[in-house]
Image (tube, rainbow, N blue to C red; front, side, top):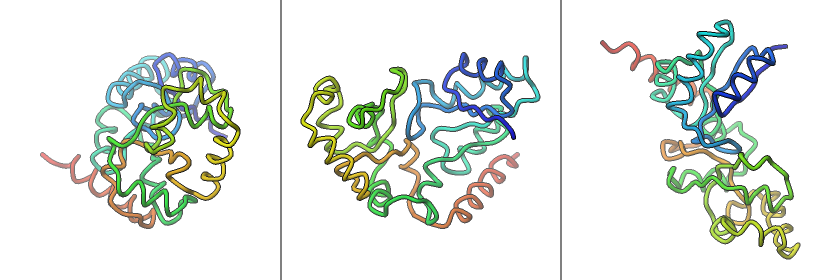
Length: 209
């Protein structure tokens, strides 16, 4: 079984190489969900150079903010062998995501996301401090981001409300984990359609003279 390791820094990539990774996913901070602070545009080529010099048999995928053919073409030019797609496939008919959260994303742009750890704090999940999660901003993040110590001591009703909101798929009461690329997502559609359009657009761009 191939070993895939998602990394957020060059140092992480070296650790993955040492662990025998068959595929390394270089994830930039534009990605939805948990990650670190490096951007996709610089992290991917830096890891590509590392692999070229020390582990050329290891495949490299780019992740973070890639939602269309422009992102795919850019990732390939930066040295990736492929991409890992999150938010674009999250916004498809097949995704196990509440319709309310998907509609909230369609009404938003990348400016409406934030990297924060409040969704972990309220659930008492002890992620390492370097990792935050990119989520859609809402009244919960507006209330508690920057007040994490207070959130840890908040009334248990705050946690209950978040958990119930998550179970209900309510984008106002819980957090919608999604990336900065949402400003380029304009519809919920079958995954095959999104991937076919992404591939065709990338091919057209890469074949330009």
